[in-house]
Image (cartoon, rainbow, N blue to C red; front, side):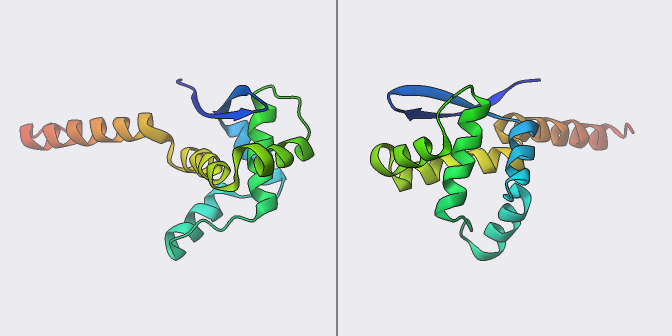
Length: 125
């Protein structure tokens, strides 16, 4: 199983945030449901995320990547170093990959569709 990551640099250190079930479960435990956010974003055209949720998404992700910074440290880095727009992009990537499965899943779906089309052409079940 391939591991997907989203990169972020905090205090000069690069972190590869794993996009995993554990990150998704931690987000849900913190009151952030990636699936509900995705459905809401699809219906409204914008990601419904608060400043505090933005910090929490990145904090949980970096914590799962091995970062020892506190949530307050992450929040301070977002405000003073990363910037809200860049942080929003990181959080959006994490949430999107959790919900969609990312490019590998998309390639798998395309491959499955091609196989299905071939079977239909040849009459195989």
